[in-house]
Amino acid sequence: MIQLETAVIRRHLPMGADYRLLEMETPRISDAVRPGQFIHLLVPQSAGLTLRRPFSVFRSESGRLSVLYKLVGVGTAAMQALREGDSVSLMGPLGNGFPAAAAGAFPVLVAGGYGVAPLYFLAQRLASKGRLFVGAATSADLLCLDDFRELGWPVTIATQDGSVGVAGLVTAALDAWLAAEGKGRSLEFFACGPNGMLKAVGGRAIDRGDKGWLSLDRHMGCGAGACLACVQKVRKSGAETWARVCKDGPIFEARDVVWDEPGLGENKP
Ligand SMILES: Cc1cc2nc3c(=O)[nH]c(=O)nc-3n(C[C@H](O)[C@H](O)[C@H](O)COP(=O)(O)OP(=O)(O)OC[C@H]3O[C@@H](n4cnc5c(N)ncnc54)[C@H](O)[C@@H]3O)c2cc1C
Ligand code: FES
Image 1 (tube, rainbow, N blue to C red):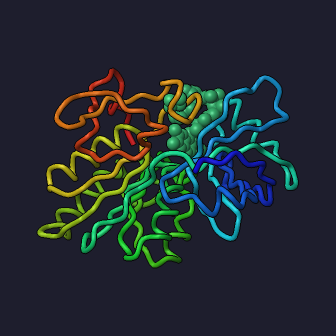
Image 2: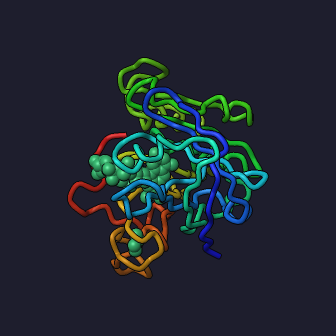
Image 3: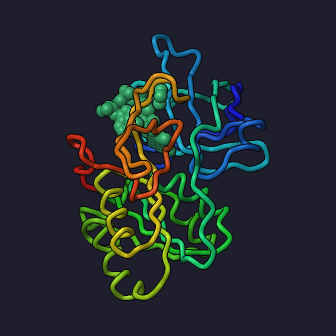
């Protein structure tokens, strides 16, 4: 059930120059949330900001929930000013979340930038270990990789400037691994990141006959299915239709996503 809860800030840590970790006490939402779901956050004291902002849940334990956010605009700037003891308004848990992993399939997680956030929560809850592929523009955009390693997950890194790991796109690193270790195996892909990356990972899953679960990122209004600000073209029962990313998603199976809107699926991971 969707809850509206006043959450008290318990920790707010810088993660390099552009990212922050915000930990909040929010017992009702924290108890209910599943990997891939998100919260809709409002900073009440920020004048002029009426719309909530959506963030994937990064961690949830003992009544506390954390998000990992990138400073990009006015809403995240207002969040940056939050101090321990301040309150925010949260709506959640929202969205469908990742489905239960198929028995016997090896989980392959593919993240771009802050896309590691929902995938870390997923890795924590999956019954079996898999492998993480993470792509970023530069080393400053690589987040929480030690958290995955502590869970016992091997991590393959790709940076576009070559500052860490493989130089280039994460899909190139993924392809190299698929060629070396993916043949004849049943894999299940879980991805969160830019559209170009999601489209590419989904294509790999479809070509191999594996499932590919993609977490879509759209600008949102209400977050609860009412305003249609977040629609995405999808296939349902053989016909094309529209889905609301906030309510019907944000997780969609690769075969169901129609990437033909202008600009969609073009930006690089
Ligand atoms: C389901 C979901 C989960 C998300 N999880 C996270 C997360 O874990 N961590 C995180 O840092 N961000 C996440 N986002 C994106 C986050 O919601 C936006 O970055 C945030 O709303 C921007 O708010 P702002 O007021 O600071 O930016 P604005 O001032 O509104 O915009 C600044 C710039 O960011 C762009 N922008 C705004 N919203 C989005 C968006 N949804 N996607 C892409 N670009 C956007 C704008 O076009 C503009 O260029 C998620 C979005 C969705 C839909
Ligand atoms: S944000 Fe309003 S319907 Fe999705």
